[in-house]
Length: 165
Image (tube, rainbow, N blue to C red; front, top):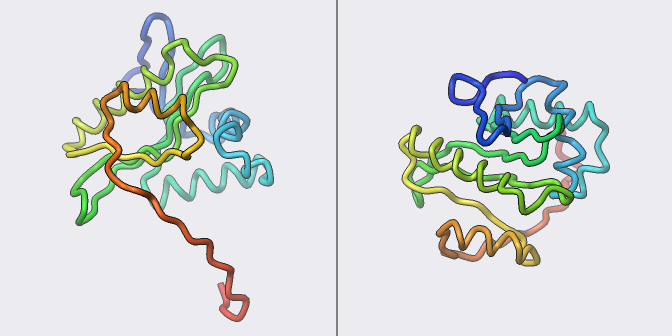
C-alpha cells in the first residue's frame, strides 16, 4: 500500500495503518471520501485520482488510512503548511470513518497519528474546519481537546468565462 506509515506499516490492535499514495489505493478511498464529500460523486475514478495527485504534488496533501477486514475503514487527508496567523501547522482537510464502521476507534487512531505527525514536523497547532451540521464530529473534536477559535466564511465565485485558463 504505497509508502509505509512511520517508516514501516503500523498495526494497532491488529488494525493496519498506512499512507495512501498509489493510484490503486487512491481509488479505494473514493467511495469512502464521497461519504464526507458528496459532490465527489460527480467525478469519475480517474478524475478523483488526478485531483488527489494534484493536491499531493502542489499542496503537500497526504492521505493516511486505517484498514479493517481488507477495506479502508477510515481515512484522513492533511497537509503541513504555514501562515502568518498560525505559524507552522497541520491542517486536516478530510477525516472520515465509514458510516458502517463508526465507534470502533478508527478516527481516534488517525487523530493520534496526526498529532504525532504534527509534533514530528514541529507544528505549533492542528487546524480543521467542520460543517455546522456535523454534531457527532464536533463531539469527537471537543473530546480531543480542540477549541472553537473562529468562524469560517465562504463566498462562491462564478467563473469569468472571458479569462482563458
